[in-house]
Amino acid sequence: MSRIAATFAALKEQNKTALVTFITAGDPGPALTVPLMHALVAGGADIIELGVPFSDPMAEGPVIQRACERALAHGVGIRDVFNYVAEFRQTNQTTPVVLMGYANPIERIGPDAFIAQSQAVGADGAIVVDYPPEECEDFAAAMRAAELDLIFLLAPTSTEERIKQVARVGGGFSYYVSLKGVTGAGNIDTVEVAQRLAAIREHVSLPIGVGFGIRDGATARAVADVADAVVIGSRIIQEIEQHGAEGAVAAVQTFVAGIRSALDA
Image (cartoon, rainbow, N blue to C red; front, side, top):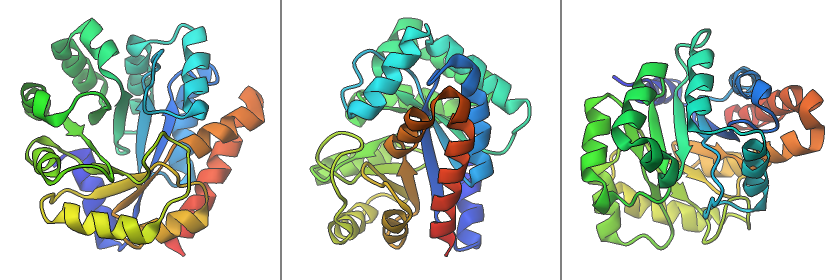
């Protein structure tokens, strides 16, 4: 059983919702990535999404775009991301780490090298925003063979055929984008989310996480009533921005602890 599957199984036994948290590797500086990962876990995160910096993150709003710019200004690339995961694994062997980003960095080093390095450093899977499921079945199969989960996004506009494709090739969990737009924008309609998740579950047996627009404990709690996981990214990046390098680690842990408390209330 993969770390992701084991995490969801353990949380289900405890009747808890998974908390999935996102940061961009290298933001606000390379030396803070691993301490921030540990702070996420200390605050109560169950799964970490570690963003691979990219110059054109098309699905991201301005907050995560700025995080990518800061990381790229420090020269952080995909090979550095592998090093951060390896360092994190020296003291944490249990928390799943999912690499999240775009196809370009993967294509530059080659899909086979990406899979081999992900496996070697102890990553658990990937979300590649611009890899549609119908065009990467071979990549998904190679990921599965390496015991890595390839996680796909579903949106309010996803057709039944796309949902079936994700059900066929996806692993780990499915990530439902609750808004028609970019990360960090708008407010979530939890009634609409519940209806969409019910339709998705007719085809997808994996746990479903909901992200884009979860900004506080109240929203997280409302989403937790209908989803298997809540995903928070932009709001965490804002904590990093507001507190700077010196205060980012403590601020992130405190913020995540507040979300965890709301989910467990």
